[in-house]
Length: 480
Picture 1 (cartoon, rainbow, N blue to C red):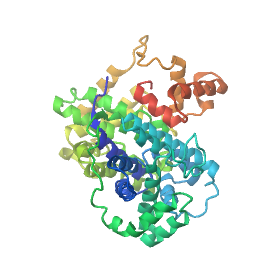
Picture 2: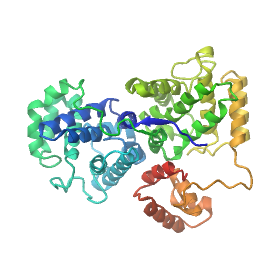
Picture 3: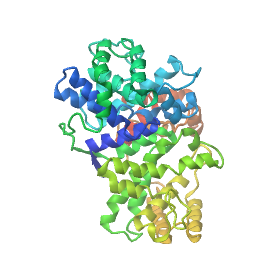
Picture 4: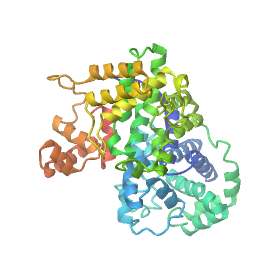
């Protein structure tokens, strides 16, 4: 079934800006504020209106690729959320793992994915190119070796400088932020830009409540697939790839059986695609913890639907969808979160969404357990419905839909894209879920060397340099 829900380009940019902020442990309006500062800097530097618009978009999407590097920074910092916050605010104590050879590949990956996001959204080539070079690129290597190269879009410098001011000022005060920025003038950003910023820094920060340039650029209202947002969110945890798509498809197929009318189906599908927004605010270590979560872990997990609801408050276009999505972990007996809603406070759409998400989660493998079989998942859901946690009709509808969706013996899955061979698609499905070459080889009963060769070919065909970028492109093309 094709998921045909869409979102405007500008609204997608706004949602992805917030997702990036949460992933970095920053306030959910950080990128909005950075974009306004960067646009003012472009104006002060004498750039034309179109440059202001491009700079604004680069500022908004500055951290859009950060979900792709969460796993890497979790390895380096322990906590990918608080650790990256401390890193960008320069409050991180010494960490021997934070060396250029360790960080540069992650910076390049983040830039690659951000550039791919811009291309998927159909943004201008100058926005895409600036995002690809914001922190480093596969073509240039060292993040700062080509600082004064005229071929680098000026938006790179505007956003670097504005982003640092916005993130450093709350931690060090405006004067302290400018002092830290001054130490890198001529190294991270051109000294002339720092000089232009200095007299205005406090005034511009005080005026951040007002937009600095319009959001009515060419194509801002064009519609793009909402699945782009879901796919970017799920790059944070490789084993989640495609999860929200599967929840949305199952919820859509369950709607009629659960007694929903056609008008209730559309927001249900949109909510399913967006329900993972708040997950990016929780460190990867919590999601990958084997065994039962501790009290502090649960404190963070319970905030997931809160942050999803908060996204709706910040981006009005998804307000209804995000509110519905934030009920995904509520249970009829009041044992869910974050509202602890019970009974009639949990509506029909919310009931279907909760069961669909639970079923897909149960039947998907996780780092700490294998996937439950369809029958076992069904037994668990029926038991929980009997205990009053799930709605019986919703459980019945979801299980019926899941059976109807199950692949039948002898019926091959239709090929949607001839770019990759069937063996390459199989390899891609394994590595997109975070499996190593050795793990994929074991599952496919081939050699690790063969997997690595296939991965190289896949990357070349997709025009990707990293697994997250390949995963994002493959999901968009319907390959996995």
